Image (cartoon, rainbow, N blue to C red; front, side, top):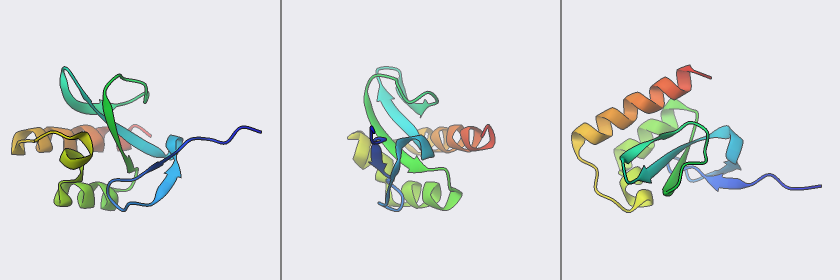
Length: 89
């Protein structure tokens, strides 16, 4: 029986099955939510929990995990994209 891949949440640092997390990817087009989890580029994962999202944004965990700098407007746009992805579930 195959094991499902696990990833660490950048908000709370707990491990979870990849399907339970939202992937944020750094691509050539910028940082964005990766809805299907298969976009090329460096990725960071966060639980589908507003508390984990808030913690990741507060700690600067997305910038660190994606190895890039994120301006305030980029963080605000990313927060909106994550909130939309959470509502779509």
